[in-house]
Length: 245
Image (cartoon, rainbow, N blue to C red):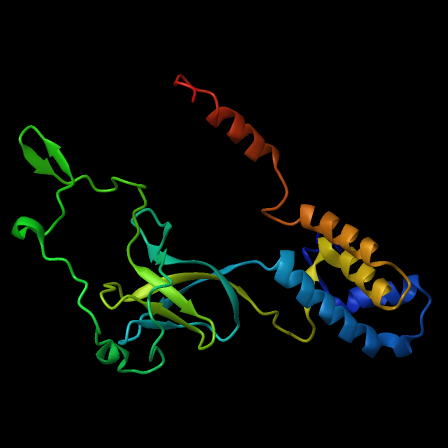
């Protein structure tokens, strides 16, 4: 048997709760809808947005065009053999010069030569001496292993990759803009925050009441609230026969 309480609730239904609660005229519907949409945007940007992961092709000029509904990104990487997203290194030194030009790579002509000559004519840097010979220790240093470099050009909505990037696609985890399907929807746990926002803008409530409702709603969002399974897992992971730091 289905329940009347679903994960999402239409924005207009939340507005009707506000109008009924405050005994307002239904002539306020249009004005309330505009204000409620502002609440939706604010909540979506700060706490409510659920990241989307998509695979995007790499263009011939080593750039990736961001989706049309893109707002902000959380991860950029490639898929590893375990089905995990291995992130790329964010290198702000990568230039965005001509990044929306199909012939971008041909414009990347260096002004200075900062390429080091190979050591002892070997393809790798031998960074560890052992028993009279040199060995390579991959990951020596900070231990960060990443599979390429990138920078995001927010102005042109483009991911700019290093010229030597060797993969034909990247995985992007990003926050998208709310989409209308007859009406906008919001997580049910945030409906009280929208009502408090409306009350604040109608001068029937306070800004503090809105932020209190927003905090309460955030604590109930998926991946934000703590579950008993996560607590039990943390306890088990912390117990073992190993030297304490």
